[in-house]
Image (cartoon, rainbow, N blue to C red; front, side):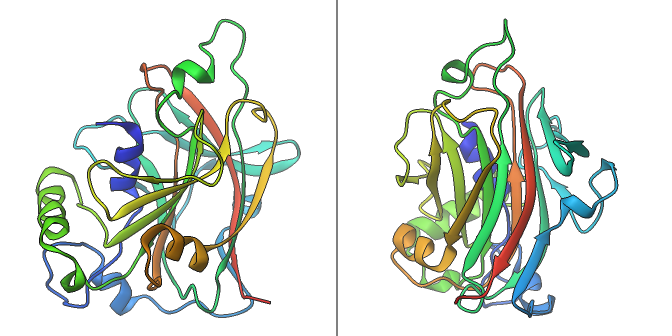
Length: 260
C-alpha cells in the first residue's frame, strides 16, 4: 500500500457521520462529545512549549496497518526552538490529536516543517520520495455518510474491515511531494474521500524551515467540491521512503486562526 494512502487512512483521522451508530466511520463520538474550540487562535499543537522527550497527550499515535512499526515522534530542540522530530525507520505511523474546530469560524491554518537534506551517502529525495509525500499535515472532517454514493460507502466499509480504525468521512492532507507541481490536488487511488494538496515540491528547499498559511475552508471546497463540515482531528506523518530507507522530518506549531 503506497505510503500516501497509509497516511490518508491514518489521519487523520476521524470525521464522522450524523448517525451515532454508523458503521462506516469511527469518529461520530468525537463530533458529538468534543467541545467546540473558541477564541481568535486555536492551538492545535504548541510543541514549542512542550517538554523534551516523547510527545505527550493530547497527541497520540495512529496506526493504520496492524503490526506496522511505529514512527518515533519526539520533542527536541532544533535551532533554539522545540519541535517534533519524526523518524520513520521501518514502516510508519501517524501522530494525531482530537479537537473540534469550525472551519467557518477558524478557516486559516498555519504550520511549519522542515525536511533535512540527505547526508552524504544517503539516497536522494528523488529516490526515497519519488511517489510518496515527503511530509504531511492531515485534517479530518465531520460529514454525513448518507450523502455519499454507493461506491464510496462500500469502500468505507472495506477500509473499516481491513485497517485498524477505518477511514474518516473526509481527509484533506497538505503534502510535500517530489515532482508534483505546487497547487495540485491529488486524489487517492483508493477512495474519493481522501484528497491531498501539494504545498511544496522538489528538494530545493530541503534543510530549511518552511512556514505555511492556508484557508482550509477554501481548500476543502476546491478539493471536494463541497463546503467543509467541522474538523475533528489534526495530524502529521513521516514514514519510510519508497524503497524502504529511513526518512526524517521536523514539525513546528500548528494553529487555526479566525478570518480577518
